[in-house]
Length: 85
Image 1 (cartoon, rainbow, N blue to C red):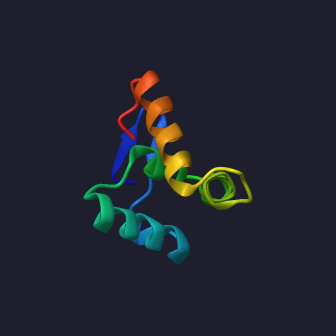
Image 2 (cartoon, rainbow, N blue to C red):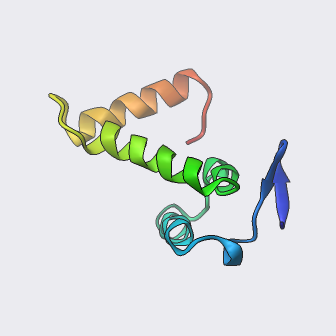
């Protein structure tokens, strides 16, 4: 373990399952950093996968909202909660 976030240990990325490491690396390339929520969830790979499954359902599942509208909702909720993500 390389670090800790609150009470969550953070596994060394080299020790993660390939699918988790790929998601984290892709996000780091796109955003320039790996969000702490990814790092914390990587401690329990099944939780990480569940989180991303939920994200996929919310952001890409059937809905009357466009992707842009969903993103605007995410930004508004994050701002209201003082969340930098």
